[in-house]
Amino acid sequence: MKEQLKQLIDHIQPLDGQKVEEALQHLDQLTKPPGSLGKLEQIAAQVAGMTGELAPSFEKKAVIVMAADHGVCEEGISAFPAEVTPQMVLNFLHGGAAVNVLARHAGAEVVCVDIGVNAELEHPNLVSRNVRKGTANMAKGPAMTEEEAIQAILVGVEIVDQHVAQGYRMFATGEMGIGNTTASSALLSVLTGMNSEQTVGRGTGIDDERLVHKQTVVRKAIQVNAPNAKDPLDVLAKVGGLEIAGLVGVILGAAKHQCPVVIDGFISSAAALIASRLTPLATGYMIGSHLSQEQGHELLLDEMGLTPVLQLDMRLGEGTGAVLTFSLVEAATKIMREMATFASAGISAGE
Image (cartoon, rainbow, N blue to C red):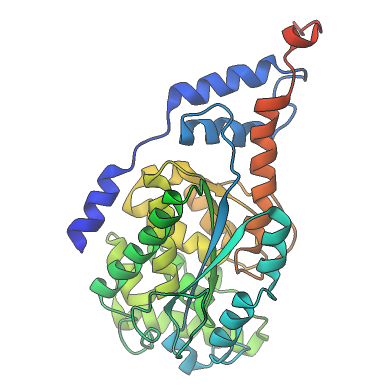
């Protein structure tokens, strides 16, 4: 499996610099002051570089919601019990969660994947790829083996492969897993050297006392497992999560197929950081969607050089911020396709 992952990483290409330049030149010919559409212009140029097309269309797009449980919930680090994970998966499948509403609004499909839920789940729309029934308690030992982490990554790649074959051209990362902000904080701490006071936030809304406890649990997990910060797979396996690993695969799979992948909040960004450490080329295919209220999110984005498009004070996860950003990515490509140039409109260009 490790060789399969290596082949995938080797397949990822840098953005097409010539197409980026062509897009920037075209944007400057449109009937507006240069750069006046701000981030929309940046997105348009980046997407052109990803796809090799000046104005690609994204009629089929999907948010991949990876769901898994976390053994570290035994430590009492969440305001919600672990049972909420499978309950929310069923909510996704019945179309009742926030991500379902916002995906419908954006004209996107929600693909819900059981990659590590600690329950027996059955539903005709569930993608069942359970690697194991939740991670082990990382405060006592490794969350999973490296082989399981790689297997979960390859699940994410497989899901993207299947959807690209069906005509999907843009993806978003979503997740569900009680305890996953704790794992994400641990990943951020190890990969950046930051302490838990900087990386640990309130997650589902814990109080001050539990926040201090959560910081202690993250420090303990890092101390017990001693993950190698220079080996992203080792870090992911020891203090990560199965849904985080699955999202690493979604990001790498999108990059392999030269498709935009819109990164959601804190947990998705932790997966993005792992993907970027496996291959910096993957970062070129990422679009940061929003700035979460979760404490460590801005630190994660800064680490990858991603600038969020939205700031809506959200901290839900699920892929909600990412699917909202789908519409803005499409708006950027429509600017390229539909807006008149100074020449075509017979308008005098600026100096």
